[in-house]
Amino acid sequence: MYQLYTAKHKKSVAVFLYHIKSIFTVKALCLISSIVTGITVTAVNGILNYTKYAEHYKETNIGYFIAVLAVTFVSATVVTFAFIQFVCYLNIKKQTKIEKRLEEDE
Image (cartoon, rainbow, N blue to C red):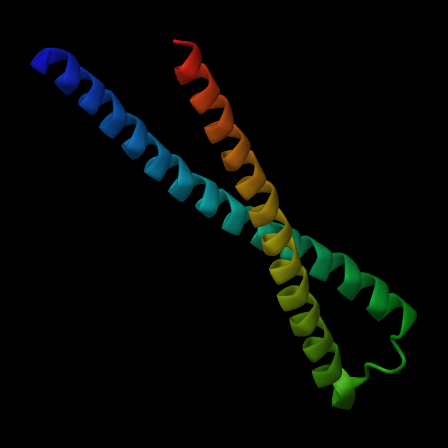
C-alpha cells in the first residue's frame, strides 16, 4: 500500500513539474512569437507608410514616422500576445481535460 501511494505521488509530482515547465515554455514561446509578429507588422507598415507618404516625412517630420512605428509595434505585439495567450490557455485546458479522461479510463 505504501509503495503504491509513493509511486502515485511521485507520478503526480512529476506531472506537476512537467506542467510547470511546459507553462513557462509556452509563455516564453508566446512572448517571443508576439515580439516577432510585432516587428514584422511594424516593418511592413513602415515600408508601406513611407512609400505612400514620403513627402510628409521630411527631415523635420521624421519624429511622426517614428512615433507611428512605435505605436504600431506596441499595439501589434500586445494584440498578438493576447491572442496567443488565449489560444494557449484553451490548449492547456483541453490537454488537462483529456489527461483527466485518460486517468479515469485507467
